[in-house]
Length: 354
Ligand SMILES: Nc1ncnc2c1ncn2[C@@H]1O[C@H](COP(=O)(O)OP(=O)(O)OP(=O)(O)O)[C@@H](O)[C@H]1O
Image (tube, rainbow, N blue to C red; front, side, top):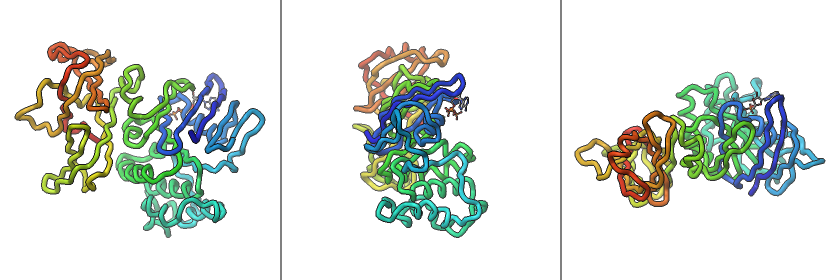
């Protein structure tokens, strides 16, 4: 584990008391409702808050009982909700600022590659005030990366963006995810965002860690609040089979089944994750005929549990070794005589996949 620690901090009535064991790369979502302590924990990781406990990153002690590495000496990148760029410097000089502060022999990122990765080549000569919110955040992320951090911290980097800017920046964050060799701790309270980006999740509730582990496992646990949320979703890992230009669809392999999604061209063999909302999954006993449903996967009922939505149940389905959630009417469960072990078909409504 590259980031581990136990951090405690009291702020008024609120107490943060969190133990962490984070993987050495990939996107780690700090997730929880408003006030659960996500930002406080992130600030403790950065050294912006000093609580009790210890913290070790990549084998280096950042904090212990009598030792505290100050924030300016921690090799980390911090991206805030609002991009904090220097207004009097062009984008190029904003980017160079962090880059130059790292000795050439310690640099682990290439300037041009990072500029390309975040798609900011065309913006280099502009001043921050001539950028859109999404562009500013891309520059802020590039600047954080150019300081060759060992840990990248992001505090709801899309919170202040409108829907269009969010849609613009998400693909860059996905690209970043594929290229990053360091852990990126990403604070969010938007489940859709987390389902698209994160590999690992730390679920916070009232300052404590309620659960932590691989995202795919936590999303579908019926004992956690995630699976009972309105927008509860599961994530399926798939592989691109082919792009059908005529139908404008991409065929994906998902276990023994196939899915079709409308996306731009994708290369065969590429891994693609899709998130499927529980409310968009329909269960049937036979594959649909004479239906406009494009996607239907053979599945097996694993567990049926109560759901807070009146008149509904939550069904956990296995699609080979992956799990899917379906929120279905209680009446339908009875009519179809669903029980654990039963073989069924999971139809995914048109908009189910994202
Ligand atoms: N300086 C402070 N003094 C008193 N209470 C504080 C202080 N800073 C934070 N808190 C409290 O600590 C709790 C956790 O706040 P924090 O901002 O970490 O939550 P969060 O999960 O990031 O919330 P959000 O999603 O709304 O940003 C909140 O109840 C907040 O009111």
